[in-house]
Image (cartoon, rainbow, N blue to C red; front, side, top):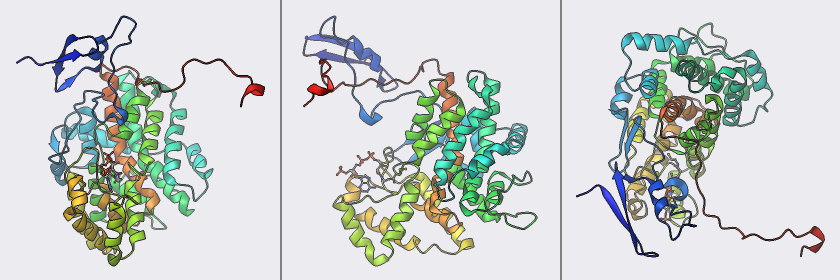
Length: 428
Ligand SMILES: CC(C)(COP(=O)(O)OP(=O)(O)OC[C@H]1O[C@@H](n2cnc3c(N)ncnc32)[C@H](O)[C@@H]1OP(=O)(O)O)[C@@H](O)C(=O)NCCC(=O)NCCS
């Protein structure tokens, strides 16, 4: 049997043979299917890219039906159990787990680029204290571009590495300062004695104590959450990073675009939406009424459903376990009971079962963040910090892929045919 697809165009009676590679046909092969010489050629129509592979990627593998997620071949459960976030970031970016000397150098480099230019601090002060920290993070990421003109040399590997290190290093600083600005607290400078997650906690929560000591359980929990959020193949924000980066824009603005995509409630804003939903439900007794409003299409059960996972999101399983460890330290989040009840009902209700709607990563992560003392506005910011390594890995892969050009989808034009301009005094 040949790995080809035979297509008969019933408009002309012509038959075409199109190669099948890796379970896909190349969309450009459809172009040769034409009615006559003046015909542009056949296109495929795929709004929201439901069935279109836009790249080849060796970074993250997801099997949505089986609930599998692997970074560079390593199961997410094993990484969450045994590795550290910076090790995972290195793995995503460079394809292999680092050796101990590579890791030492990598941690050293990231740790020594956590400071940001002082004018960025003044830039932060320009925002209203009650503005959303994610809006500020997006803006400041883009602003970083103005400090590093050489970041435009996107095809220079060495240069790229320098800016990758800078971005991964500075994300927690910007994020923590966005939070401190909301509270009117002085910014805390990075502490090089602490690890990546520990230093972030210090920049967030340090007050008058001379040295901030992160709670080891909370520090580890945050690091695991960072691992779970580091990459998720071609989602909305990653596609934004790739699309913007494909114009050879620098990594800072490419990541600002990705962060903007992540801000939306259907993507990285979902955990914030989950918390708001749980707070609004407010009481266990109100759960059945809420479920019936979801089934009537009046609202969404936030934190449920996924474009790719049609099974339990493997990250949600790890997070559910993590929640127990965190609540042991912080005390139980009272909204947990409502979440558990929603999950129990939904997993047994025909509406959700038939549509394969299961808890996704956001269903429990917000409860952990809240218990750790984060306000809901910080949730998408917490998502963006580790996702930066995934965005950068995907951005870098795109730049090194000879098959990739500037992203430019086609359209089906549905507007008017040509018509003559009508002067204003003649318009109806
Ligand atoms: C993630 C999401 C955007 C994926 O959307 P999608 O792949 O386009 O799936 P669809 O919107 O086509 O959903 C398919 C069906 O399930 C329903 N559905 C999907 N998610 C739902 C939810 N969270 N609550 C209730 N119904 C839901 C849709 O209404 C649709 O029903 P229909 O067939 O009767 O029209 C969607 O599930 C959603 O909005 N979830 C809530 C937000 C969220 O948690 N996002 C975080 C993702 S990590």
